[in-house]
Length: 128
Image (cartoon, rainbow, N blue to C red; front, side):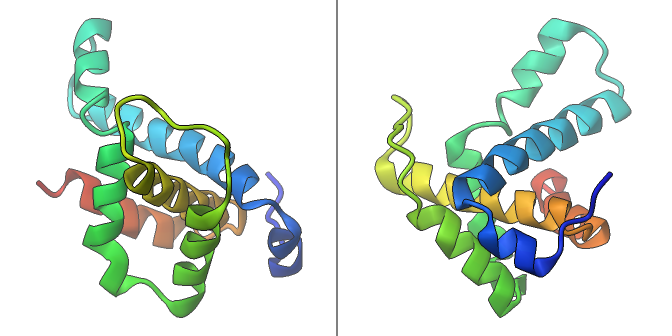
């Protein structure tokens, strides 16, 4: 799989990063649930929706914010400030934008090949 350079990532739209980040985030959640013994699809879905929503993604940023580098915070801000033209019915604009910023950060870490850092930050999801 291609590892993107910093220059390539700077040229990429924050919403494209969020698009990739959303997939990586959801796959991480699904993998965690299966790894922890859930096998029935209905149980998997019920458990996944506790993590895969704008409110939880927004809260995740609050949990990791102090651990981010300035570059990571900048990536988050670009994602948060991107205009998607979409607003889900179950989240405020502020929550949705923070979730988009979080997804952009996840996408950036994934595409830049920073898998260990990504794993470290996403582990906070399951620390409850």
